[in-house]
Image 1 (cartoon, rainbow, N blue to C red):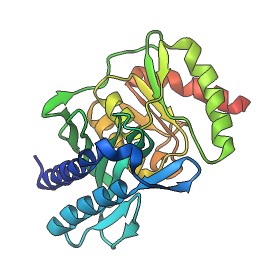
Image 2: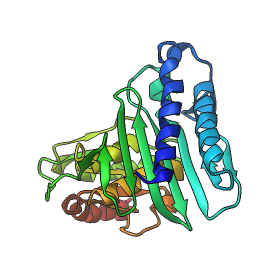
Image 3: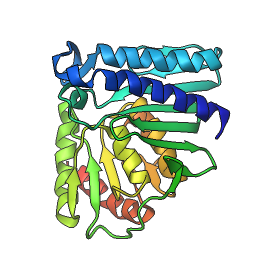
Length: 262
């Protein structure tokens, strides 16, 4: 395992321990609403602090981009951190949330970890080395058509335009697939695309920490991830389409048509 990935795994597991210790009290924890339906708890902050402390102890000159504390440092190396993706799930003790850590070097994703502490599933990858789930090599699904495909998504909140666009795309995707799933943690949705549990995934309005680790996992697992128009600006735009190559190819024009009508 690459030394930087090994440190990221250590940080993710430490954050996972912080989260799991609080799961029995999750429904009673005080929470702050950062924006409409976007919550943060003290567990988010504690998990993020553990991650940052672990990373900077090993690499003190690296920069950080974290969901709760924002950007800090100035370096060619930037750690992109979501300490608890799926906070609303966690607050209800709904067991679907994850820790996400990615490393960019000169703007290129190089290392990624997504850790589900409830299931103890550790998704890891280094650029050029393939994608893994608990040290087992994973690949995206072999599905080449939408008939029978299971597709993941996320319901947008915040800007109403995102919701209007999303509903149009749902109308396009739902009738031609086996179903759509919305589990509430984009990082895990992307990891599930990487290991073939989902054939595809799309969402609007995501942040870099929601996308970065999953993007590298999908690429290294043989899948495709783009923005909704098929370009490479998904981290900047927050609009994501991913899947097996065949499913991605078929979803792209459906989404384009739905959005043009909107």
